[in-house]
Structure formats: structure tokens, C-alpha cells
Image (cartoon, rainbow, N blue to C red; front, side, top):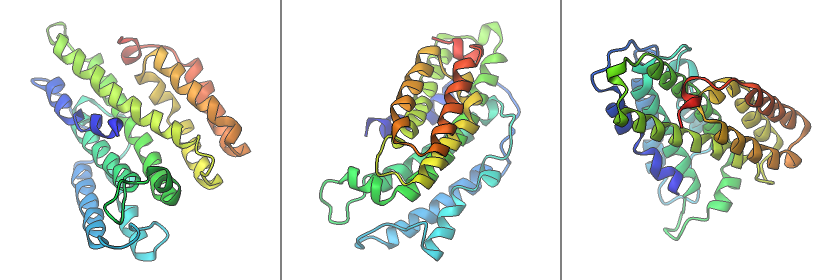
Length: 257
């Protein structure tokens, strides 16, 4: 639960870092509005299901279409490169996606304490799609933060800015760690294993560029612990992530301790 709470501070930290700093955005102009509208539709659908024994499901023909909008990568994230000006929009996306993780993980139909262990198995299809999208959003945000740091002038390199960058990076790292922990669930179905593993492999270089060496090793160790549980295709994709991250040079944001 600590992971969910820490993400809520990211947008405020972005504002602190960007104060007085002019840059050009690359996220689609309507990307944040699309994310907000899609998330609002999901929230409305969830509220309409209150009192029922379950949440909206991806496999449902109607629910699935509403949920799919909230994971529409081209509409929400566009394409890289991302710049410092994209940080607030990207962190807004991250926050809303983490909220979806929270809703499904902490679901309780009878107002009793949530059975998170049951929920992550029951709702693994919805949680997997959210983990995969979050990996894309995190990779984009880390690239934007790297760009922001690379263009700071000497008088802009304040302790407050660097502390804000560290805190943003920590929140984003926790999301990557959450995806790696999801792979360690023995009840995760092979197709979902593969989706998360490929999501990690596809964004390995961008993730590695944004995190410090010790954090790289922690993520690698977590994924190595998951490998015995994985089917061959997922294990191969995780191996690709580990290889890319292990070989990545440490520059820019990676060097910020």
C-alpha cells in the first residue's frame, strides 16, 4: 500500500522541478485529456458496479471496450522523444494507472478488509494490462526527466530540483519493481507472464537509463528470482531485459545518487 501512496506526490514534485523552466512538450496535445476522459469512464463504470461481487472485466464485451481506452498507447503517450515539458502529463498518466492497480488490488465487495492475494489472481488480466501500460509510461517519464536534467543551466541546478528528481525517480522505480513482483506470482497465467516480460524487455534501455546502478541490480535480482516460475518465452524476454540493463552505460539520470 505504501507504493500506491507514494505515487500521489509525483505531480507536485514535477511542478517543483519545472518551476521557471521552459521546454517543449512531445506528448500528444490531447493525450492528457484523453487519459482523463478514459479514466473518468472507467471510474463511472466501477461506481455503477458497486454492490456487485466483482469489478468490470476485460473479457466482458462492453466493459472491455471501456477499459481498453485507458490503455491506448498512441492516443495517450504518442511517441518518443519526450522532453522535460512532458513530465507533468506523463506523471498524471502514471498516477491514474496506479489508481487502477489500487482499485483492482484492494477490491472488497462486502466492505471487509480486501483480500489482495485473491484479487491479484482474480483480476490478473486487468492488472497485467495496467502493469504493461505503466512500464511504457514509466519509460517515457524517465526519458523526459533525463532530458530535463540534461538541459539544466548551472543556476538551475538547485538542491530542491535534484531532490524532486530523486523522488520522482523513486516513485517510478517502485512501479517497475511492482511489475517484477507480479511475475513472481505462481498463479500468473502464461499469456500474462509473457505480456509483462515483453513489456520489460521492450523498455529495458529507457528504464536502465533512468535508474542508478544499485537499483538496476535490485530489479535484476527480483527478475532472476521470478525466472524459475516463467514459461520459456517469458523467461527469454526477462533474460533480454537483464542483458540490456546489465550492459547499459551509466549516464545522465543514472549517475544521480
